[in-house]
Amino acid sequence: MRTQRLDTSPAAMAHAAELLRRGELVAFPTETVYGLGGHALDEAAVAAIFAAKGRPASDPLIVHLAATGDLPLVAATIPALAAQLATAFWPGPLTLILPRHPRVPLAVTAGRETVAVRVPAHPVAHALLVAAGVPVAAPSANRFGHTSPTTADHVLADLDGRIAAVIDDGATPIGIESTVLDCTTTPPTLLRPGGISLEALEAVVGPVQVRTRPTDAEQHGLTSPGLLDRHYAPDHELWLFSGPPATALARLRAEAETLLKAGLRVGVLLPAEDLALLRDLPVETESLGPASDPAAMAHRLYAALRALDARHPDRILARDLDDAGLGRALRDRLRRAAALVVEV
Ligand code: TXA
Ligand code: MG
Image 1 (cartoon, helix red, strand yellow):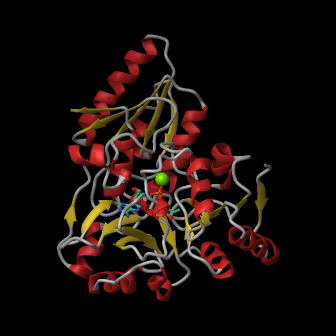
Image 2 (image 1 turned 90 degrees about the vertical axis):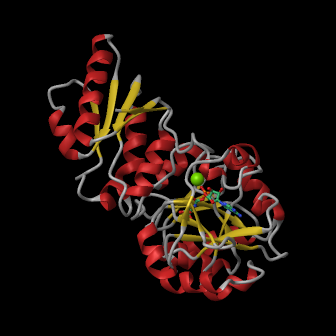
């Protein structure tokens, strides 16, 4: 199969919507990352999503809707708290875990009686969902376990020949995935930090439980496989230095010097200010932008990881970032990308 690269003209969008209705797979931009879309109520299309990604059937998918009003199509009941969150944050980068409507195939939810749902804000995603007229299941459009895609080129690098089409609308604005919030627990549980901060959620619904580290039961039973330790990983090993910024950077520099002395290639992923302090070292660098701007760093993160990977360093070195607001999601993705976290 050749994967078509589509633009966002009305004709191309109508074609993409028709492909989805027919059960074909179409990758499309959302405000977070590119999604790998398939008809959520079509079992064969859902099976094809798992096959194209190489994703284990135990890892459930997010169902994307054109509008909050479509929620009764896929959710059996809508808890009051979920309705409040939908009003506050949809369309937007928030995924709600709700009771599954029997109409949603168990393949979508990996056998769970809950379903993950979101209404994306990206105009292309929205237009596609409206034109398709069906709920669209869409994981991030990367190979399973790999860095998520923020451009159509990233999608093609992972999935060319495995999906019918990708709609190319340039880089996605936020750059990291949606926040996943389980609304079937009291209080609700943050399963994955993302585009909507914990602080913003709590301002609307009060206290939220945070569980970002997998328990043993989850490692085996897997409540939400996005919680797996190793995920979002580059091909080359990443070491993350965690601790006070100046100390972490000093340890990172020492490690870089050791590796360079041994004749190895070193890649460095850091805020711009940090890179300025390493200017004297012959390392491959990718800047995340200013440390004071978590949104800019989120926007850059995955593209920077892929760019470093493409230069085949023997090791990638990075440091932990401040975890307030969007920083919590950034830190989470860096930790999952890391083969080793060095506490300093
Ligand atoms: O921003 C995003 O959420 C992107 C765009 C394309 O919308 N999608 C995305 O999908 O990141 P994916 O499949 O890469 O991540 C979905 C996450 C996984 O961590 C999965 O385990 C969790 O949502 N999830 C899905 N259904 C769930 C459920 N019923 N219960 C608990 N976790 C669930
Ligand atoms: Mg993903």
